[in-house]
Length: 80
Image 1 (spheres, one colour):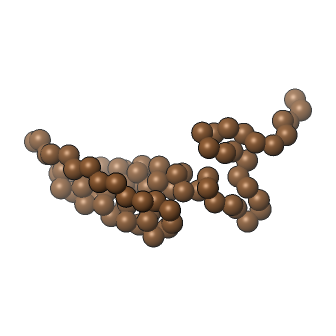
Image 2 (tube, one colour; image 1 turned 135 degrees about the vertical axis):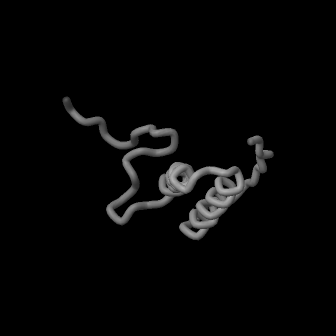
């Protein structure tokens, strides 16, 4: 079965946006005929990608994350 792909840009700046991304992904997967298990796997993967796009820009309660954009480590190097 061939389903036409629909591209949609969604802003991801908050937890509310993450919910919108999850719902849009689930809807697209259901429309494409994915099984419930496959829908859940896809939604989980997309949700994690979106969350990772949001979290590096946030400060954690215990300070900034040790990794910046593109996985570059910031701070002092550990002695080995």
